[in-house]
Image (cartoon, rainbow, N blue to C red; front, side, top):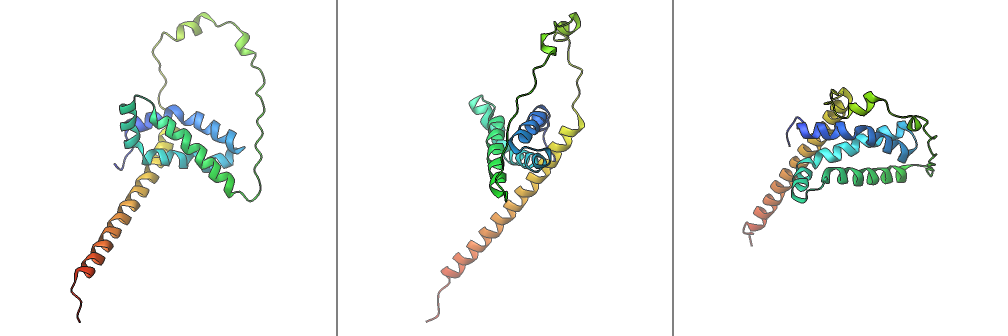
Length: 166
């Protein structure tokens, strides 16, 4: 795993961060609780990014988005189980929008034809970098644990292979 996040991961986070935050707030019932969960979900996706990108190419589906949804559900369920008191989240319907009833202006209808001037925002880049950093640290710890376990098993095998004195 590289130390810096790849560009496609930054684009993935930029495209889905707002929806991820809204969904996390909806599932937890508050912004403070959501800020505990969605960075962990992004770290989970970052940790599996190479595999998810390969799987997306192989199956021609958005495997990263599907994994993001599954991890969000799992992290939210885990968060609810860790709460001292039972969590009750109630969803309220948003008020009907009166803007949808207004006819679109000529400029709004032509805006779809113009190239986008929207630039990537700073917050998604920061969130992606933080998630990638956490996943990178976790990957390094896992690599360290694998090396230590392998050395330990080799030492045990070596000690078992030594002849015993009678």
